[in-house]
Amino acid sequence: MLPGLQIDHDSSVPVYRQIADGFRGAALDGRLRPGHRLPPTRDLARQLGVNRQTVVAAYEHLAAEGWVHSQTGKGTFLVDPRTVESRSPEPGSERDTADGWLTAFSQAVDGPNVGGLLSVYQTATAIEGISFGASYPARELMPVEAFGRAMAATLRDAGREVLSYGPTAGHAPLRELLAATMRESGSRIDPENVLVTNGAQQAIELVFNTFLERGDAVIIEEPTYTGALSVLGSIGARAVAVPVDEQGMRPDLLAMALERHRPRLMYVQPTFHNPTTAVMGEDRRRQLLALATRNRCIVVEDDWASGLRLEGDELPTLHALDGGSHVVYLSTFSKRLLPGLRVGWVAAPTSVTERLIRLKQIRDCGTTPLLQAALQSFLREGGLDAHLQRVLPVNRERRDCMLQALTRHLPADAAWTRPEGGLFVWVTLPRNFDGQDLLLAARRRGVHYSNGTLFHSNTDGNHTLRLTYSTATPSQIESGVETLGALIHERWPSRPDSGDPKPVETMPIF
Ligand SMILES: Cc1ncc(COP(=O)(O)O)c(C=O)c1O
Image (cartoon, protein in one colour):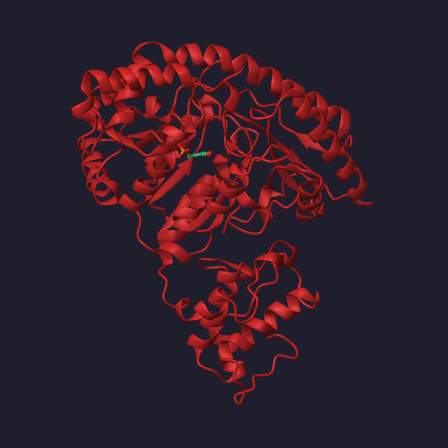
């Protein structure tokens, strides 16, 4: 219960607004701290003597304004007021008076974490100052002219075909090429088992909706990709978070989580995990598959950064190791080539592909045929290989430059990964470091990056940072990391807690 919260039933301010205003005021004047859990709606309704729906409306109002976030099964938590003040509407403003809508929305648009992906995307695409925020390939290296030639040739040779409705599952020659490429990496797969999607994000959305109902348990890595959390929130599925170490998801904790939660599926990124950059070794891959098979848990493998290895040997995908029986594989051309194409794909057993295609038809009637055909022509002519030959050395130089800058400018006790590939570095500061404060201070100095909380299903990760190296020049990397280093030094806790993961007994998975 919030001290001092009094309901005035004679007021012209609706009761739900009085409750929301009470919590907002307490967050602003510091009586309630960020991360504070709001009382369960039933309890607060009883204490205030109001209808439970009124409290639900108050919490929804706070959520719509960005003051709280909800986690299925865990509760509703206050966020840091510094991140929302500027978003609050003026009383009487258009947004304020639109409140009549607030109880009308579905889980699909207002569930926990649903807005997370959009806010990451908005930060990532706002290019001003020095940006380490986007998980993007470098714009200046995009093969614009070569892709333009492929587009022109496609329109010339097959204009009428590619400007008509295309097959829902995708352009047949592209599906053939994708299946052939996967076969070269050891997968057993036919073109009929490939569905072309609008990027990996749509692949995740289609796959999750194919298997999950509201309330279903799903195993995720903690931390994990924000876009997967947003889809789970929109379905109302229950995220069971299994912590990762330097090799990705921990099998001992996975075994416990499988036993206890009987999840429908698990979502994993075995290679260049976003955000921690971890790569799962082959033994652990086999262990994970054995556990999943034993517990009849579908494995969704997100291989988003395939092709972006900078050093070390390629490892077999889970799909290749498993023979394609229990693994639904997805990947994308967004990171290795061009994010604006919005082309990704799913590879799955026949019965799954058939259902994915039904859903794809409902969602958008198929990915743009013109782009798929141009992409296939670009790939057939060796455009991707030529592009990667140009990009990978640049990525390697930028990664090394960032690692050197971190060594130069961060306190000796800070920790960061040395990624073997992908697009970013993951930095861990002491647990009691205020990452949100650092984020805002860095933004004021023109340096942008992603705070670790974005990748958590709970409020954890405020002491972690994801820094993308691929989109910044070496001089931007040096000066951006120097700025970050100075801000981190100024804020370094006098008695730093370790940034190491918490001991197993207290891991937040149950
Ligand atoms: C792990 C992961 N999966 C999927 C995606 C979505 O990629 P796409 O742009 O192809 O939709 C991203 C994008 O950042 C990602 O990091």
